[in-house]
Image (cartoon, rainbow, N blue to C red):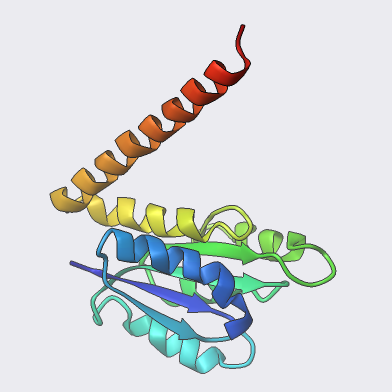
Length: 164
């Protein structure tokens, strides 16, 4: 099975990234976590990205706050799918991170999830791997069924409490 790389611009992004790690663990998808800054360690980020495919990765999650633009820097150096997580930080409340992640030039795509949306970043990567992995596809199907059951149970409890 291909691995997922999780890269963050700073270890201060770890509380957000931990949600992606938890999802990957739940689905038993191998992963590696690294701290590479688009601006403070650009060469290391570039080398990692250029070699990610040959090192067994199937997708890369890149989390960064402010206008760090880590996802774009990674995507510029690989043809693997890159999923950006704009991290809420700084004086603009994450808007700068969102815009720097989602506004990519034509030819260098970055999939972008919600601000602090690490769980969805991991699920999107798992869905990509599940295109060719039936075991992962079955786990995703089971999660959807479990999620649906949980919502319906909540509906039942709320209706029982409040409906006349």
